[in-house]
Amino acid sequence: MTTLTAARGKAYFRLAKLDIVDYYLGVAVVWTLLAPALRFDPAVLTTIGVFLLGEVFVIAAMVALDDLTGYRDGSDIANYSPDDPGRKRYRKPLVAGALTEDQVLRFAWVTGVIGAVLWLAAVAIAPFSPLWTVALIAVTYFFSLQYSWGVKLSYHGFQEFFIAALGWALVLAPYGLATGEITGFALAQALLFGLGPLLFGVYSNTNDIEGDRRVGRPTVAALTSPRGNMFFVIAVSAAELVLILAAPALGGPWWFPLALLPTIVARGWQVWLGFGAGDILRARMLGIRIHRITVGSLLVVNLVVIG
Image (cartoon, rainbow, N blue to C red; front, top):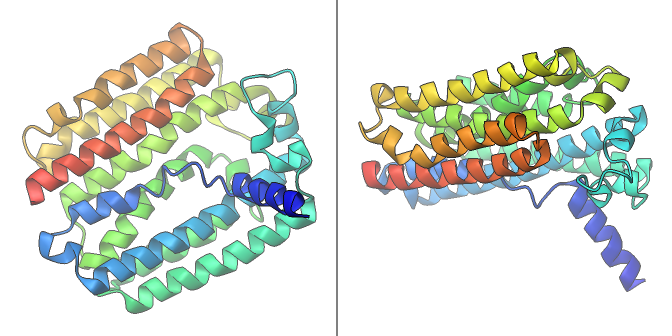
């Protein structure tokens, strides 16, 4: 019984993708963006902590529903086939047979409800609750659960935008709750943060073209030619570079692009690895590392500039 319980616990852990912490790093960026006097303010810390906990539950619900939809339409079975050693089937508990559809659906609704309660609590206890922040949280919650369920946002051509927009919201929302405002420099960092998950998501989509086309999931990679998809990925990478170069004009220090130089160089390497060398999955994994390097650089910049 203990072994069975442990195995099921691991399956739920993998279902919630709790080992992928990249969206959760946004809270660290927010904390360093705060004035030193606010970073250890009890109300601010409690608000950010409750928001982060709610974020974990909301994302768990989102990815569980995504897995359920992907299993039912056959795209996950195709993309995680046994003859593809680059994709690990155990990361998809439904495909691996570790959980049933009913278990996944119950998990999604329970975590979704808990996430909603925690985000409402964060708004209630926050030092500030401007209307734009409350609206942003409500919209983020709604579309997170509708990403692959209900209206199935990702099945109507909005997948790439949502991946980036979720990152933007998960920085701007807690920052708004803590400060009641938005600055140009905070906006620039939120936009950079959201592009991180997108720039490993587009490489996943490039690898998953066949399965996505089979079920009619209209990612850019599935809708365009290989050359068109390559130019799209390069364009998104270039947009990140432009944003880095523009950050000083939005309130960042003049040396901000130099601090983000590791991101700039690694992003060029990622493009070559994926489309020059043709190793899409390695490029995807590099994208995860680049996002974490970017976050680390932002934290250092904020601590130096803001104090």
